[in-house]
Image 1 (cartoon, rainbow, N blue to C red):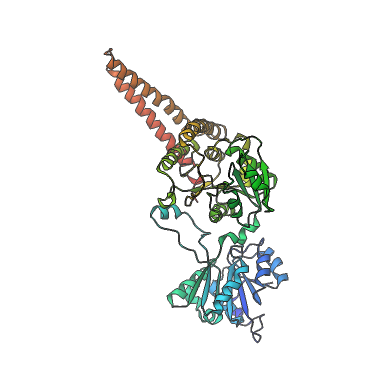
Image 2: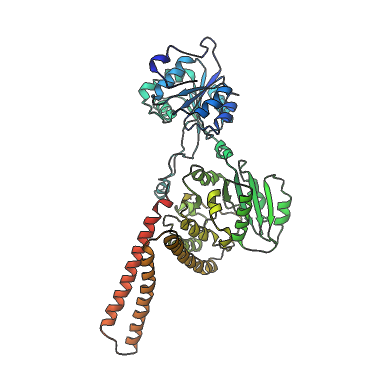
Length: 520
């Protein structure tokens, strides 16, 4: 069993066969996870002759898995990564070096594609991803400034041994626990090396195979697009819960003819509304023990390529609920009519106040994902059954302290026709939001805990309407030439302004109470 590295001992010991050159070696490093390392090593060994696993910290579980598989574990401990890499250089004379992460981020089955490009004469080949696993905190700011997040090039590389052997790792100043391939890539770019970037399909990320992922597809008269929607759902999704909400067209027949074994077909014999259809799907997903459940409407508006961006914050434990946001960028709103944009703006403001998620925008965006723990905590039978279900979900999630974040993504409009009539939508949803607002104040700030902001809200809800009504009374009396005390206008202004001030204080305290619930 390996122990922490003694630099003086490194060069005098070697368990590797120097006199027998091998075809390729692999270094599995960074975020090594005992749940995935076994399968990663097994697949990687199909392409290489020697596998090293670098640990930042000692983990007995890793040794128990890797040793039987013939991989060599190096416990870097507090040693500089340069020392570790120098050891590997000294022990090997392989034509090609492969590096990949140990948590399933990189698909070892893609190693053959990296090797193919090395054979074509490249010094270094990078398996790139446009998902950043470390930080998305500034993503919204970038979109506001008309910038796009860069393609992240981390961890998954292949390079020729001559290039790897010629690197001075001590000079690269690689910090302990950092991804050393970033320094290697930067060095390559600065020294004119022949580099090739490969952009792998994000739908095949191995990390998703660690979780049972379900998709709920609410459908009502979607004969035109339901087939296209289902065919686009990625392979890593375990089950597809299609909820036919009493469609009158050919949708039921089309669903019955689908052969995808992941499909769970559920039909409402009476039309109950999209919210009820989603609740039905949520309940079945809980019965089938799904770890994460996403919503993709049957009209193909929701781009499956964006699904990983909803799932990853939940997998990383940074969110309980994620949702799309189409309103953050003008480019993202392409295809959205001005009337629809205005309706979204009104509903956004109403939902911010009702839910207490002041950092959430585009609340009626139905492209969402939720953890099983959050679903289990909710009273699903209390969810609003009309189109405002997503607004109602936010009210309930905030009340119970769930972490919700926005994921910026473009709108996708095509052949589908929106069934939402915004004039009716706002009329129906607004009273629901007001009731939800009062319920949230009572449950969150009185029953579960006490916060004086409820007193400020209560005072404002009494004083502002009274001040406005009192002011209107004074105006009417003046118009009718009736005598009015000179103190009344001053009193009306005082009451109204004090009510508005209480309202501002209440909203400020509400924002502070939930500031951490919408940010990564």
